Image (cartoon, rainbow, N blue to C red; front, side):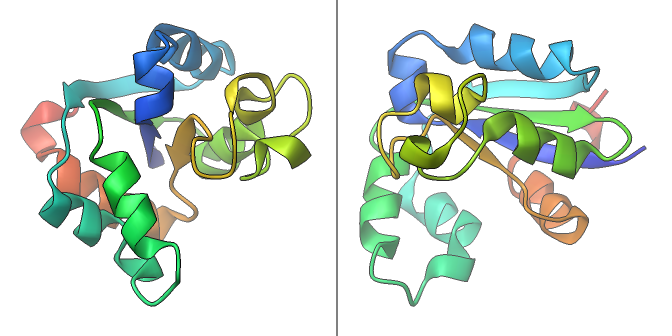
Length: 137
């Protein structure tokens, strides 16, 4: 069974959208396998976004993702990475289609409601940052 990490970002959690986002993904036939709410510290945020370390927005991204609690989840299903990315929509909500999570709930390119793993390899690494195997059901 394929797995992917989802982070419901601070903007969505603060607006009470966690349940709606999870429901949309479950409605796509994906199975919720793990779930927790936490407040990321800067060290974990830097490790999670390490791929962006040399980009000009890295510092802002770390500051934002650590600004308030997030919900992290593991979803399972066939083609789960692609299916979550399709449900999420384009990174910039201005370019995300109506009916996608970012298109409906995203505020801007940073406060865009959801993070989803971009590949199976990335998903494995990301899941390991947030969950032990004992926490995934």
